[in-house]
Structures are given as C-alpha cells and as structure tokens.
Image 1: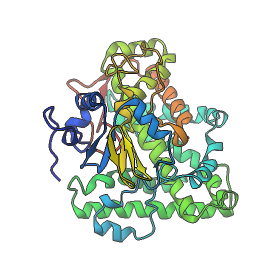
Image 2: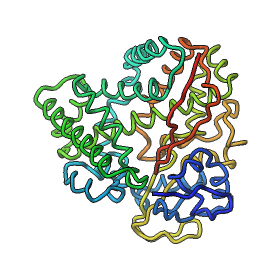
Image 3: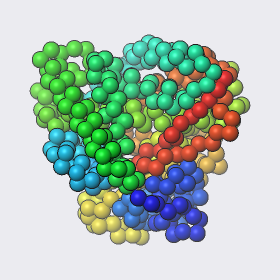
Image 4: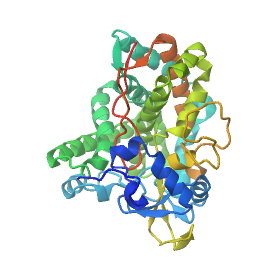
Length: 415
C-alpha cells in the first residue's frame, strides 16, 4: 500500500500518517499544529478522532464510562480475509486488559496485580541483572553491535519468559509469535505478500496453542510462576479459557515489545549527545531520570484508542457513538502548556506533570514498576561494562510505521 509523505502544507487529517516513516521519525511540526488548533480532527488513515493536548487526553482517559476500551486492540479489520479464515475462533482478537472494560477489566487486572507490586518486582532484580550481564557478555566479544536486536529486544523477552515460567523448548515458537503478532497488524496495509502473511499467522497460531497447553499443564501441576497464577485464575477469578489465553500474549506486548523500543529510544537519546552518555557513565544513578525523560519525549506506545459509548461533543466536534478516538501520548507529553521547550530532551526541566507513557486511570500500565526496574538495571550495566559506547558513524534513526508503536529498526553502535 502506498502512503503519502507528510508535508507541512497538507491538512492535518492527511499530514497525521503513522504509516509514513517521515512523520513517525519527526512528528513535531504536525503535532504542534494539531495542539495549536485547540480541537480534534478526524484521521481517515486510522479511522479515529485525533486528540493531542495534554488536558484533553487526560480527560478522556479519566472517563472510561463515556470513552470505553472494549476491543480497541482488535486488528481484525487490518487482516486479510485469508488470515481471518485461518485464525477462525482460536485467537482472542478482543485484546487483553487494555482492551477490556469493567467489570471484566477489574477481574482480569486483579489476576495480574499481585505479581507486579513493588516488593514482587524488586525480588526479580538479581535475575534481571544476570540477564543484562549475559547479553553484554555476548556483545562485548566484538567491537560493534546493534543494540536493538542484541540487547533491547532480547532482554524484556527473556525477563517476561522467565516470569511466566516458559520452558526453554518453547522459546523458538515464542520468539516467532511475539515478533510476528505486531508485524501482522500492518502487513496488509504495507503490502506484505499474502504468503508471508499466512506464515506469520501460522506462527501466531502455534504460539497460542503452545500457551494453551502450558496453562493446562500448570492447572494440574502448579509452579512458582505467572503461568500458574493465570491457570489458578480459572477458579479464583472465574477466568474463561479465552481470557487466560489472552493474558499471556498481552504480557508480551506490554512487557516486551514496548520496553524493547523504549530502551532503544533512551539509548539513542543518550548516545546522540555524547555528553549525556558520559554523564551516565560517571553517575549511573542518573539512569531513572534519563529513562523518565525518554518516556515523556519518545514514548514507545505513542498513542492509544478509546471508543465513544454515546454521542458526545468534544472540543467543538461531534463524536458519534461507536466512533474511535486516538489519544496521542507523544503529542500530550510534548505539550508546551506543561513542559517548557517540550520538544527538547532534558532531565533539568523538573517534573511539571506526570508523562502519559504508561497511560492514566484504570488502564495505567500494571507492569510499569517492572519496566522501570529493567531500564534502571540495563542502563547501569551498559554504562559500566561498555563506557565507550558511541553511535555508528553517520547513523540517524528512522522510526518504523505502526498504528500505535514508535520504534527504530536498529541502533548500531561501536566502542
């Protein structure tokens, strides 16, 4: 599918194009125009009203009764008919946690929250540090690397797999399914050949079937892992088979794909200005501050949908019942009304308002404490073990097209 490049002279509804690498790489001009107009506009590309100001995004997030989340992550309409037929009823397309409303959302969230309390997350520090050190051991054998594919991507995948209790023999299927699930969401739009779409769909089916088998095994033979927590939810929280199945891929989307890109985003911000990286090397305790500013400036989940449950007025526009809104976290996080010089990256600005990278309200990311811990340890280990890291000569980032994720294709470095 050919998509037009963004242009400052285009109307906003055309200029806002997440399937265009030019827009995804440098969205500032379009987002500033949208915020300055002080209203919302309809994007035919996403089929949703686009909301960009901080206050307006927060107001929608805080009203789940009027703006619901039911099935917002369903990608059925983005799939080819052949893939839909292949999936049949085996794949939960309604989404997990983020795509469910109360009371089901409350019930599902209760299954997971106990595993992501501050004390539960802190108990995993040694495991996360070991995983980081092991990855750096492999990287350090050479003199160059792609930090995305060799560090940022495998680290959270390994952490989530260990927390779930995934057996080693399941990892190849897991890696394929986890990679192909977000890729399939845009495959049809981007003109990926049908045979490749079918291959991705088979990998996703294989992953879901494997997860179902593992949950059934944990129900009979429980262990000290998240798969057992989910399996026990069948009785404790009255989870259906479909709900249990949906929780595991949901964890990989929320705990792996998003963090992989966020780690890459913060590393780019540090290495693109060597003084920042040197500051981290001198004082690794700055890591959480750098990560928080990256969450504000470059959220990997750059936006999320809501659906109007009834006709309503929003910023002078009539939003009809059933219409989607796309809340642009990236634009809200760079709102000059809350952040001075908002498009710049700086840990000196102070915390004027909490950034929206992890959402707000009832759908605030349950795994946020784990993501922050992984980022802190990752930056500590990298800055300590590879203090001479620098970007590959001539590298400039290009952000990949995607309806709600913002990440690079690579991050080449040397030392």
